[in-house]
Amino acid sequence: MRRLVTIATAVLLGVLAPVAPARGAAGDGTPTDPDISFVGRWNTTNPAAYVPYWAGAYLRTGFTGRTVKLRQRNTVDLWASIDGKAFTAFRGAGTINLTPAPLAAGTHTLVVSYRQVAGSYTGDAVFQGLILDAGATTVKAPARPRLVEFVGDSITAGATSSQLAVTDYAFQTGERLGADHTQIAIGGMCLSETTDGCWAHQTRYWLASGGQAGTDPWDFGRYTPAAVVINLGTNDKSHGVSAATFQATYLSFLTRIRAKFPPTKIFALRTFIGRYATETRAAVQARNAAGDANVFYVDTTGWLPADGLSDSVHPNDKGHRAITDRLAPILAGALS
Image (cartoon, rainbow, N blue to C red; front, side, top):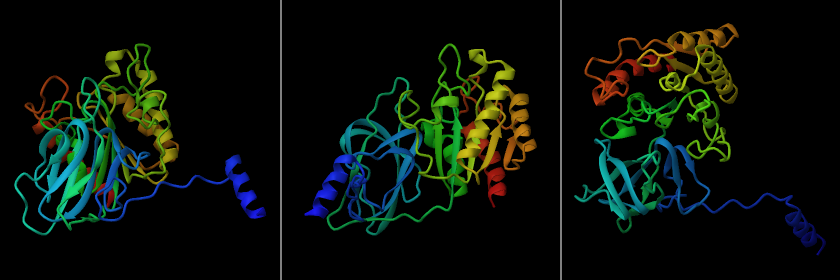
């Protein structure tokens, strides 16, 4: 009796940790199935429905059988790749059939990435599980040895590319490296907080829910990237951020990332149109002078071909491929 009273008292006082929600069985295709890997920033608090945040978040798994379907809550746009083939666009709600033409019997791989819910797009990016053939199961996809995080704005989110995040240089560079990858990016973002309200990584990178102010901080213990690639400054100029303020904010941002990820290599890209190039380089040099040899400035001058832009700022598919062709070898060499 004394033991029961002690436990009850502990529960009332909040001394005992809450019981973690039960995980799904391996192979069952539910959101908590340990055979499914969720890459990026996902809200996993509801075991029946996982929600991706920011651009380019995706899930990876293998599965047996000839068909695979998604359980979705409401209408959403998404892209899926099976067996390493090109991503195919889907749109729908409820049950979305990713294999209208059944596959050959055997074991297959699957990657699914939802369109980012941001700006005017209000799709319902809520993963509720997979539906497989009778007797089929999920299979743990081969582990990828490292993760690369890309931090940016609409360019890093793939704003004007044909399939948005999945045809963006960040997603494509990660795939080229055989690495997992995240895109912490939303259209219109600045590095610096501004008086006219530009969304800024200075504060929102540290938040969980797609950067919305007032949300809980992101749990940086969820993963440690091998590299963080930063492409910021294109929008700050339009919001009146001075060169001195930008440089100081960039230096502070690099310092905070280093504190979160001590072993990570950090790459600061010159913005593709050259804004704040001098200040970006100076912030990197300040970190180097402070003894941090794992922060690098990447000069992107001339990376974009003349026909690599869809407007004055945003790369098209050709532009993103050109960036990938230049960036991937730099990262591969530094991470080898």
